[in-house]
Length: 358
Image 1 (cartoon, rainbow, N blue to C red):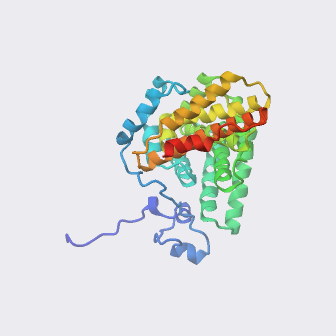
Image 2: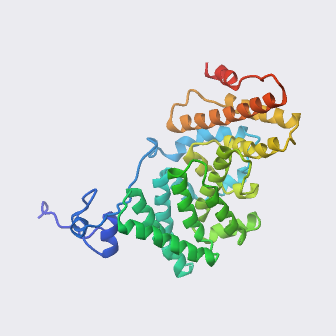
Image 3: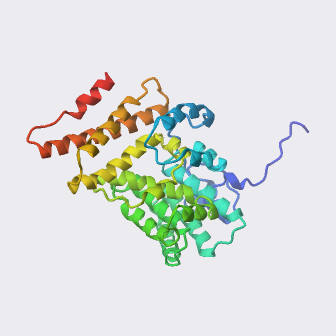
């Protein structure tokens, strides 16, 4: 009897989306199970991609590499006491889920389960919005163009419109999902309309840091969605070079250390990105002075000096890319505007970067 194996029954957690929603026993075949093949429908498996080989590395090992950067940075916008107050659940979740399209859907699914299991009462249309948005996102990830996929897209948009009309903050989950697809699949840097919509909705509920802290405590997962939108705001503004940041400085305080560790961007480099986004409007308005130019030069050189060529981990290489990008953009901007003010070109930024590379 010890060698006899008994069937484990239905494992709903491993079933494809279609079989799970319809209570059908799935044979777990990929990319298409037998029940869905017989019904000529899509399985809608939640696909996942591992972008970083260090995904299983414990978060404790990476903390010694990031902590010196925080202690040395005089430009950090996030106070040290705020890092200490990060909830353990959020830190662990970000440490195990990569920041990309697939990781965002995993986050959305995780928070949907939290909202369902929480004692807080939410409107039915708000919970349905996240459910429909998840269905659309999984269908979109598979790249299916069948009628079910199109209907799922239209249903998600319809539900999002209803929740936006009621001005419920849960609509930010839907806005964040469509913004994520725009970032990954749409024209690069042209996702600001989603960020602007999120800011307009957030303004109805939050007018200061205390308001946004209370709101994110009431709705699980909202802080992480807002972190994405704030990140997209800064990166999109840098790409467009219009200096039109949508969120304010106090909104950006929602970015915590675990988010920076997930994207691989050092907090002080992010501060440089914000500074560059703000400085673009000042350059265009000709309101800059010698002090601002010297400050930008110092911040750019600080990024070059912080490069650690001995760190060949994925996280270390990602940090180096962000630092190089920030320094090059800063030097290029100084070079361009110096050339505009004077008829002769200034020092080439590539030559300055080459000193560090060699």
